Amino acid sequence: MSSPAPASATGTGPDLFGPANLPYGIYSVDGSPPRACTRLGDYVIDLGRLLGDPVLEQPTLDAFLAQGRRRWDEVRGAITEALSGGLPADGVHPVADVVLHLPFTVADYVDFYASEHHASNLGRLFRPDNPNPLLPNWKHLPVSYTGRAASVVVSGTEVVRPCGQRMPAGAEVPAFGPSTRLDIEAELGFVVGVGNEMGTPIAAADAEEHLFGVVLFNDWSARDIQAWEYVPLGPHLGKSFASTISPWVVPMAALEAARVDTPVQDPPVLPYLAMDRPWGLDIELEVEWNGEVVSRPPYSSMYWSPAQMLAHLTVNGAPTRTGDLFASGTVSGPAPDQVGSFIERGGGFLEDGDEVVLRATAPGVDGTRIGFGECRGRIAKARP
Image (cartoon, rainbow, N blue to C red; front, side, top):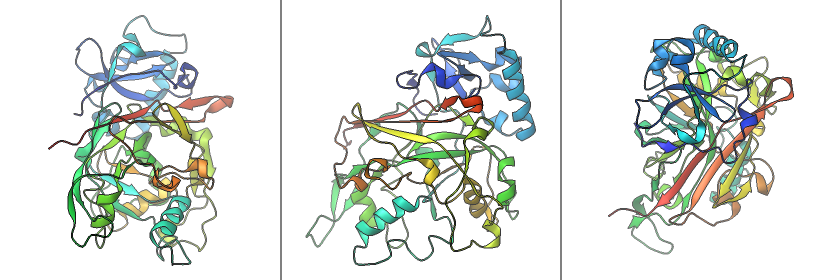
């Protein structure tokens, strides 16, 4: 399990954690064993004590995720009923007093590239002489690569500057050393609760039976290492050193009011990706760099639906498992202040000691808004 991080209410607001939200997490207090919890306002509530369910007394959410959608709905209903009269008398802690842990065991990790704005921005940067910034396959399939699950860490874990090969400008041979072009990618991560058997794809229409919830996701990226290595097989060491997720998993059931149509998908997609109404999510992200908000990327602009991503991930018969995590790719909108990576801003990469915090909110039921907490990471000096 990744190193735990102190919980923080800064910028998350107790009003964003009302009864419409009820996210899931794993907490400990005063050195106690980690246990499942939810959050209501500024308080963390022990779910094992609230519901008397031994599955929710475990140090990860793994067993609960594996129980499936019917059970997820039952537990959410039971939590809502138990908290309808206010906070319980037992198992309640101020959020500032607890430590939040990685909420589930990350089984496998895939990163997509689902923002047309981000893909176009990078296409113009990397292929300036090509009149079409998108590669030919981009609007026909959700492009992705398989990453390293062991490098996914919880918010607050320091990120050590990676070392690797890079090709300096004007050089004829590569150099080795710490990355000098360290970047972020503001994304959402989707948590698979129940997987599929090998050889049996998940249809886009059935994705909601498998998707448990959403986390904030920062795909730290060493652009100089990535640029030298990614041809012909794609990202590797420029990405695999660290990815940070928020400690709260917001269940898909809490995001019903955030459903929106994706942008029009033209040309028409192949049948296995076709949906009567491809859905996205009206989630507003916020990127804070050393205390200053520098961007507000809108997830509603993402071209590919999470359901289509999961369908594509499994269409060749690849299995998924409880705790699989797939990320959306960088969330970027059409405006300069809506980009989800610093390379799209024209430069200004991360220095040692810099801290980046991702936050997000979405519409909840009855005109409320719900929050996702924080996805926080500070850059530590490269190690020899």
